[in-house]
Length: 195
Image 1 (tube, rainbow, N blue to C red):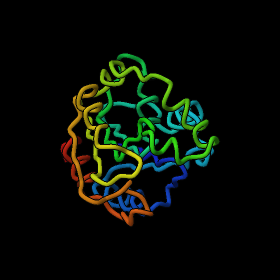
Image 2: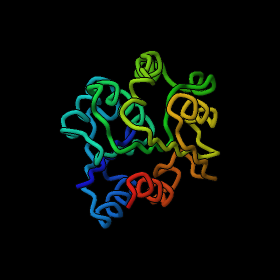
Image 3: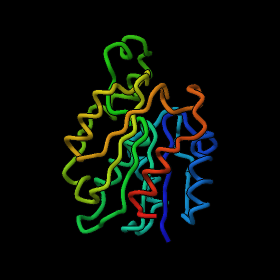
């Protein structure tokens, strides 16, 4: 059976409308879908988030897929870094993959937020190791995301040869952006899983 793990973002939840919609649509296509509650979602840390993915994604293989949202994308990347070299997964969809802070955000945010962010931004990612586990990466960005600049598309193209899709006026693909469904994410997951 094909499995999909949907990893929410910072201050996110499995109950977000987009995640619930994706889960329902994928289950209709006979996927086994897990949307875990990530630990300390208000103060996300790399190790507990990667450990949570390891705990739920047992024996990943070519029938295993991940959808990450925001910082959940980083958690998926960092999880893939930990896999044995011989493990191949089906593919990954990144929705609003948050990778670094721009100058404006740094100036606007509190010191506490900056301290939470620092390890995620400063800890390098072994992109070669990540890419060794699949050649199917899709990066979905919005042209008006307040947190994720469109320049991130170059990073994902260069490091992962990802297919990049830019949506119009979808914000951060979250509740505050009033996004309750994202057909392109469903379409791309079905494409890379050949259903």
